[in-house]
Image 1 (cartoon, helix red, strand yellow):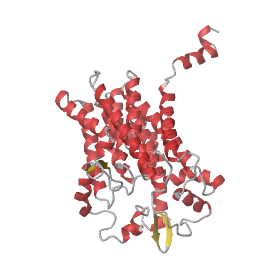
Image 2 (cartoon, rainbow, N blue to C red; image 1 turned 30 degrees about the vertical axis):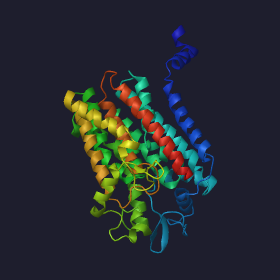
Image 3 (cartoon, rainbow, N blue to C red; image 1 turned 45 degrees about the horizontal axis):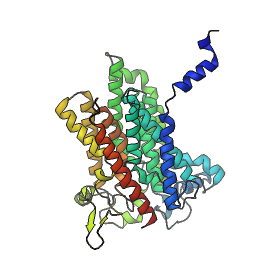
Image 4 (cartoon, one colour; image 1 turned 60 degrees about the vertical axis):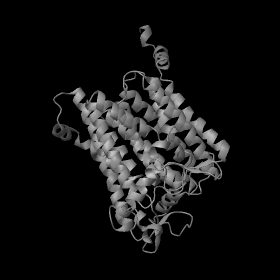
Length: 418
């Protein structure tokens, strides 16, 4: 046996070539959560007072689709005089095995930490893949920008029902985009379907996944055809179909419609004249999407609002960077990356318009939480449009430092009710 074939030589080579950022990225997330816990007392080991998904999982294990009773502090749908969880069901799928052992006291905050770390690792892998492993420091910087320099920070802080769903959706969307870029349709569509089961508007980004896969396939095979790919790889869509079918069956069994997951039966929407979605909400909410913090002369402070959002690009400066790079590409080179970026820009704009037709923009929170759902694809678009030189780096550092300070202070202040 030659020296290079020995197991310890192979092990050493793997250690030597290991990407240290795969350790540093999770440590950054854990470091933030420690700082957050130190200032708020909200640690991952704590219980979850807003445990709707655990209650639902426990009810399923007991053979019941509804919760059996009302929990006044939770957002529950009321249908046929029964109380149901009003959110899409996928997080309860994840909690089912935990509910077997923990009942309704599932370790939601710890589970959310795990999802956050997985999502951050995949965000780094996505950036690194798009840059072909050539600028790992930039991939790291963009990863911490999207997780700690944007409003993402707010909902990765704990496992409350609203934030657990958004956190899971964020991670699953990042994974779907990564596998789309790597031309793995089975995994990409599967994780996308799971993300839709957390945040339904993620359905909008199916086109982005398809474009990324088509571009990857064309790079490998100049004779590629969509019809041919469907003919040979159609079975890879089965996991996605099974996940979607489970939603349809569950929705129909609970509410008599395959598309109804319960939010329309929330009392706050049934009491509202225009319901959950209406064109009448559009312009008021659109104005909130761009409103700046308000200066208070009596105190000399700025009011950042804790309902219905503020300027989304202020709390998530990745949006601003993406817009700047789209303009740069428009002037410099209208290549394939630019066209993909334009598609992403258009779908994100549509997403924001649809969000503005919702009665609220996220309830009580710091920043503009709903718009964070678009950040995984915005990250991909930003990396695709990234210039080759280093001239852009000062701007990225500036946006990261600003976003980190704004969101860290805003998140801690909001959770502490200061």
